[in-house]
Figure 1 (cartoon, rainbow, N blue to C red):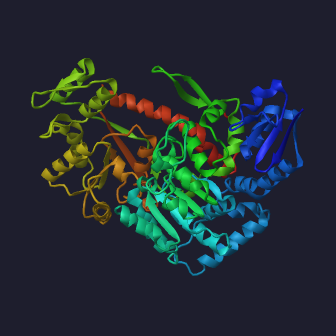
Figure 2 (cartoon, rainbow, N blue to C red):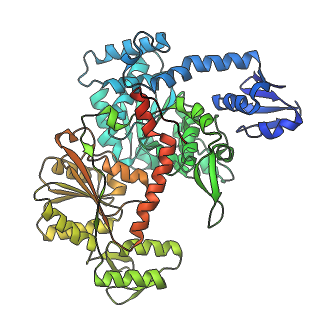
Amino acid sequence: MTQAELVGDVIHVTSTYNERHLIQQVPGSRFDSDLKLWRVPLGWPSCVMLRELFKGSLVLGPVLTGWAWTERKTRLDPAAALRDVLSLTAFGDQLPNVDELTAILDALVHIEADAKLRLYDYQVVDLAFVVTNRRCVLGNEPGLGKTGVVLRALQVMQRLGMDPFPAVITCPNSLKRTVWAKEAAAWAPEFRVSVVDGGVAGRRKALAAEADIYVLNWESLRLHTRLAPYGDTELTDTETHPKELNDMAVRTFIADEAHKVKDPRAKQSRAAWAVAQHATYRIAMTGTPVANHIGDLWSLLKMVEPTWFPAKTKFMDRYAMTTPSFYGGTTVVGIRPDTRDELFRVIDPLIRRVPKSLALPQLPEKLPTQYRETPMGTKQAKAYRQMEELMIAQLLSGELLAAPNPLAKLTRLSQFAASMADFNEAGEVKLAAPSNKVDDLVDLLEELGEKPLVVAAVSRQLIEIAAERLKKEDISHGLITGAQTTVERLRAVERFQAGQDRVILLTLGAGAEGITLTRADTMLFMQRSYSVIQNKQAEDRVHRIGSEIHQCISIIEQVTPGTVEERRIEVLQGKEDRIQEVIRDQQVIERLLGMKVKATK
């Protein structure tokens, strides 16, 4: 018989020697040789796994039983109920955790009585989920107003005496002022907001200012906090030393575009862990919680609930299905079928996701991607084949360009599939006309008549070549790239939305987040990213609130036949399949519509 009891903030488990292989599967478990028992971190996953691993032979002590009952009744069960509805009217008179939810709704009604902006029904449920859960992931698809929900949630929390301030919001640099500062002024003008930017002195001054909310970008976050450890990663004295954010006594930590923590070795991920660790309320916002596979979710969960899955290796061993990689190591190919249900029992109460098709049924249909073949010109094709076969190619100037390794070769092939290239004055490789992609862009614009068009690509150089060609053709256009300031990007968006420019050209790095380009019903990808997240976010610039004026949204992708671009389509589809295995949008739609969910094979 295996016994488990809560002692302090650790679960003590006594089991037989023959059962050690079971208890070792629980993340964070370790044997205490002095007490002759196993110590397991306190958390809902530990309770679920212990039940699953030991079945009927597990006996819970009264203290652990009381903790688990309270955690379920006051947080997890209400959160699970809320994640499954689009409107609170679905509950009728049977509201979950009725006293707390009634208080939340009363506070919301009082706040919105004189407010200019009000939440949609599904956003009211979002808010209730966030406030009830306190530590969660708001994973609605992009364009559904997560920013407004979180700001209103802070208002409700303040009114309920939950003391949410100071709150720290980390987000992409382009969203600090254009989204968070702007939206805070619209939704919650009473909040004092300090935008942290500038040099070191300016950032420290902003962090020292009296404010309710501090907004800083992901790159700056790691400069103003110590870093949390991860595995065998060595930390310098500077990285372990407490800094401004560690001395602030942060009450609420909000991570916007929280998928940016997917790499646990990245400094910005470990910075987010360090700041979130001591915050009472932790809110992760991302419409794309998984970029590649289930492994991306671990770092996000660690930020929201640090004690739930202490070690990534055990998380992956327990839930990930892997296969040996051609280059060594392993490749994640999906979720383990035998632990799939357990995984979702653990994580589902933490994550609420509403697909755009349900929240905003008034949005136009997004049509399947149309592919346009863009054959290479003679010089381009010659350079591409030389690089493909010999790892060396002749450029426009006659000079030779070599690829020293397979990764460099892939990069060069991607470049030659889009344009010719040459060396610049600094001796660097730079894309140069002629470009099959740019030639086809001009043809497409002729086909579209006077319709506005959004054009996206990974390469800034390709976007700049396109801009030069549009200027030559006297076609009005704007640019959103990393070479521009925030003000210049904002002005480009305003001109396009106002009808002053027919085309807006953007790089996926600079233009995939935080902007609205709903004047266009058509978007052209000159290049796709290998990141499903970037591609989806870019598409959501045109398919969001405001696009109701269109009958449908068309996505067009240029593909150079006989090149690596054809393989990229297959790679992205494989990633999409693994992502859907985790976020389960079809099942979410069926559940929220009250339909019977089909069994998953």
